[in-house]
Amino acid sequence: DIEEAKKKLALNQEKIQEINEKTEEAERELLRVEERINQAHKQAKMQMDAANDRLEIAKEQLILAEKERHEYTTRIQEKEDEIRDLEEQIKADQLQTEETIAQIISEYKEMEKAFLIRHERRMQFIEAGMS
Image 1 (cartoon, rainbow, N blue to C red):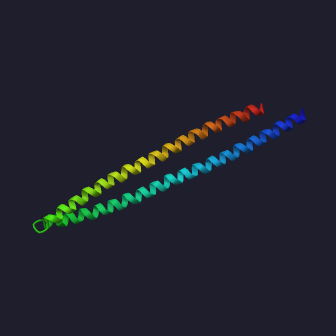
Image 2 (image 1 turned 45 degrees about the vertical axis):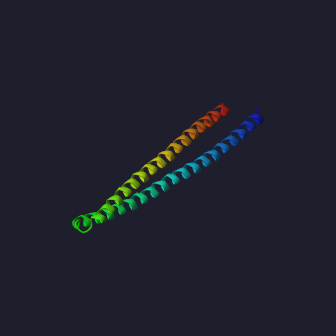
Image 3 (image 1 turned 60 degrees about the vertical axis):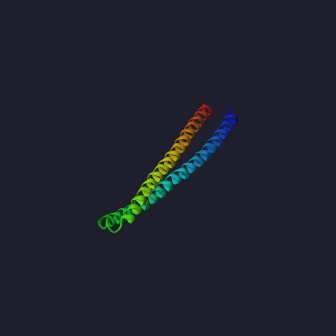
């Protein structure tokens, strides 16, 4: 009986070690996903800030052109086009950023769900092995 109990104990310890290793691996993967989310967020913010800066510059230039409309009608049209292009680019960048973040969050949630299911199964397995 003692030998059998020692074998079971050793087997359980091996299982626990394996679960610990897999848990650490999953935690490292979670950290990598979180880092990707943070990086995507930072990059998106920088892109949005740059686009907003460009938009503000374009708007200021448009105001100056409108004050001198009689001399610069052609220039006004060019700046209006630039503003439309920038607004479209901002919208496109924002949509892309939102899609990227949504995708990363979705992937994270799926991975988290799978991790939790595996973790629960392992815990049940350990509990069953200890009984």
